[in-house]
Length: 551
Ligand code: NOJ
Image 1: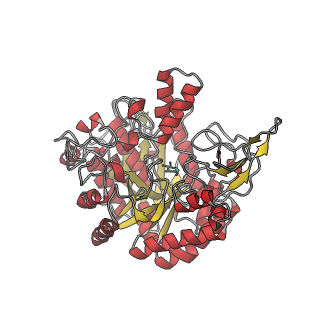
Image 2: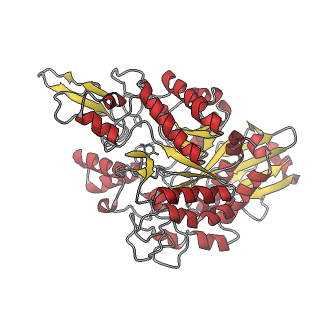
């Protein structure tokens, strides 16, 4: 099997290192903690691991602000620990994907520090410095009207230089790199080669659709959820060309893969281009994650979910199928809720694993990790987005309670709670020191949702997860089969997967209501049932029922 097929045939499991497992008892997860859990992951059937950033970083945005691309953040360990982790991963027949954050660096990166200190230095052109415009009163103001993905203007004043600004489409601690400068591409290619030559399988490329700014003209507001200016930098021609070059120069010769995080949001047209030109081996789009109909609500109506899935599956060949990650709330309260929510979690796993594309699973998803039962107090929050959203809401004089609700809606605390390996100690098996103060509070729901309990229970989400992961590994029709959607009631999703050798049928009730089995489909009842989330037979589809048949 070649390296590109490996990513097609196996799911990816995302580790958020600071919250995964703490080996040295400081309340923060680390690399040796990950090593200690590799057998747990192997036993789940996982073959590809993706680590959120572990590079040296001031951690303003939890590592998505890199200060040194070739060194490990001491919080996580040393380069020796990393080498050992990689060797242990490979020894188990698994592969390791690193995060690559190259839209921006940290403002602490020596390149940026030098660029600030010495405007004549070559590093000045590694970033986007621009003179501001003058307002009616003759005062300098921002070079254009762009806003940042993290709220507020996308420009920050350069200290000590009148009227000079630098661009940051995320926080001001994350200055954007200038991808018009070939030296930046060369640096990034060297960094990638450095890690791949160690044996890293590939990269999950952070906001990769946004790196190449085509112009610095004023932007128009595209949608309530998109910052101003995106039309000048999302999925630009320059972006496509850079990715083709990186694949050709670095990734393909080393037998690796690129997984793109494509915010913006990108369209299915953009997605097609990324895959047709072999630029990205798979990618994450944001339509499905952003389906919630209002600013405060997180709930996604099943009908909308169905429409978006059909659109992406029909128009694009190979999606990165995810529902949770370190930026997205857990699926409960979003896609599934109510008394049958655990059936819902199994149904969603069935969806992720039987759609065409690579399934991406986020740590804890395998045993139904939930958001915190009630929002953390603002003083307990660690995420820069949570804090910025709260401050802005308060700045508009919104009441504290509403500000906190908004902050939690857009903030990223819930999904970053420490992992729960058991419920036998106050740290839920996260730390070697049960008394250590975790970097973020433990989730009391871990008492109920943790790996150890779930492993013992044959009806748990985790037991189901193991089955569906194994099913996809065993039956190639779920990897290589074409997909066709069949007529079905509005919140029921029915599709076939088909290769020359085999055909499978998937029936998913996306709603928490009973639904009739479509008449046209009753023929499948005497076919071989490969997997179901309920155990006894029924004449109707029960809430969140999932059925997978071999035809
Ligand atoms: C996407 C990452 O997933 C997120 O955590 C980060 O804050 C932004 N990119 C900026 O790097």
